[in-house]
Image (cartoon, rainbow over all chains, first blue to last red):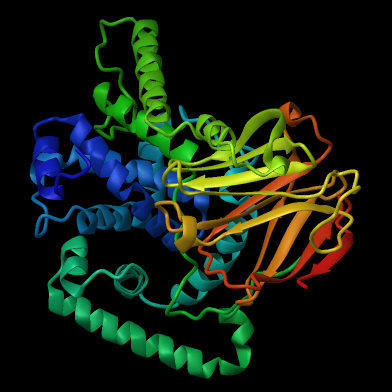
Length: 197
Length: 242
C-alpha cells in the first residue's frame, strides 16, 4: 500500500478503509509531528496534537477532496486549526489521549533525549520571536519558510486565496528582517548554540 | 551553531516506539468508531460489555504492534550471521550474548562482549549496511585508540554512509561505569551530548553505553574533541582527536 498515491489512499479512506488511512499516517505522521513541534516548541504536546490531527482527518474524510491529490497541505491545515484552538481540541480528545501511556524519558533514550531537549529550548526561543507576528503571518512562515510548502499548497492548507498567502509571506519577511536588523546587537535572543554542559 | 528566524531546528521523527503506539491507538479509535471528536468518548456499542470491547481493543493493539515489529529486520540475527563468516577479525568474536540496545524502524544499535573488549554495531536500512567497532577492554589492558581512561569504544556513522530512512547517522559507543554523560564536538562546530546508560547484563561487562542520532556528514577527522562527564556533572576527561 506504501506505493499508492495520496489520492488513491484518500479515496479508499473515504470508503472507510482504515488500512489506507494507516498508510497515510505512516507517510505523514513524522512531518505533521515536526510541524506541530515547530508551532508549539513542545515534543509531548506535538505528539498529542499529531494524534488529534489524524483523528480529525478521519472524522472529516467524507467532506474533503485533496488539493492536487496531496494530503500533506490538508493535514497541516488541520494542524494549524488544532493548534489555534489547542485548549478546546485537547479537551475534546482528552479521554482518548489519556488512554495512551505517558512519555517515558528512559524509553526515549534511543531517540536522543538530550538533542530533543536542546531543540525544544531553541524552538521556544525562536517562537518567542515569531509570535511577535500576527497569527496569520505566523501560519505562512511556518508552512512556507520552515516546511517548504508552495504558496498554492499553503493556500490550500489555510483555505485562503494564494495571493493572500503571498501577501502575508511578504509582510512577514519584511517584519522579521526589520526586527532582526533592529536587534542585531541582541543576537543572543535569536541565535543560540547547543550549550555544552 | 546559530540559527535565525528564517530557519528552525531540524524536525525530528516521532520516536519509533511512540510512532507504533500512536498508530495502533489511532486505528483502534477508528475501529471503535470513536473518532467523532465528541466531548465524551463514547463506546461504539452501548449494549456491548465494556470489558469485551477493551479486550478486543487490546488484542487489536497487540496485533498491530506485533505486526510492525515482525515486519522489521532481525538485526541481532543478521549480526550473528555476519560474525560467523570465516574471515572475521578475532576481536569481533562474541564472548557474551549480543544485545540490541535500542532500535528504530530501520536501524539498530547493538553491543556485545568481544574477545578483547566491548563491541558495538550500528545497522541501518538493510542488513548489509552496518558498521561495527571494538575498543580496548574496560580493564584497559589494551588501548589502541586515543589515550583515554574512560572511553572504551566509539563508532561514528555518517548519514550518507549508512543512513536510516530518516536521514540520520549515528554516534554510538561504550564508556566506563563512572561516565554519566558523553559529549562530542564535531568538526562542523556542533556539540552533541547524550546520557549514558548501563550496558545490558547480557554483555557481562562493567560499562555504560550511549547513542546519538543526528544528520551527520563525517570526514576525517570526524570530531575535534570528546568530553566525558561523571555522575556529579564533573568533567572527567577531555579526549582530543589525534
